[in-house]
Image 1 (cartoon, rainbow, N blue to C red):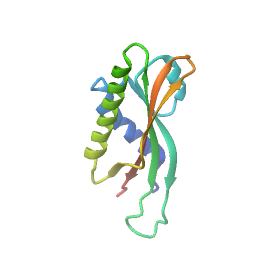
Image 2: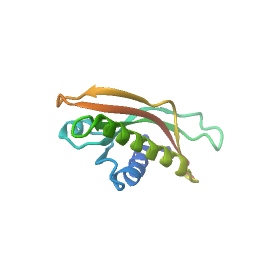
Image 3: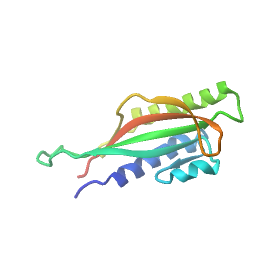
Length: 142
C-alpha cells in the first residue's frame, strides 16, 4: 500500500503543533488553508507541498520521500524589529530541535535545503518576516 503525502503532511503538522503551539511560539499550524493568513492569527506556520520522490518499488527500502516548505510568518508590527527577529529565530530553532529528535522506526524528518528569510507585505497591507524552511518526510510502511 502506498504512503500518501497527506499522511506525511498530517504527521508534520502534528509535530509542529506539539513543538510550537504548545510552547506558545506560534498561534497555529496551517496545513492547506493559506487563506487563514489574512485572519490575523500570527505568528503561524504554513505547510506547503513541494513534491514527492517515489523510487521504483523494487527494493524493500524504497520508500517515498515527501517534500514540504514550512513557511513561518512573524509580524513586524506590535513589537520591535529585534523582538520580531528573535521570535523568528526561536521558531526556527524549535523546528531544528524537531528535526533532530523526531527520528523513529516509522518516519524520518529532515532538512532538504537552506532556509530563506524575506520581509513581505501581506493582503492586510502589514509587514511580516517570512521564513521558508524546506524539509522532507519519509514514512516507512511495514
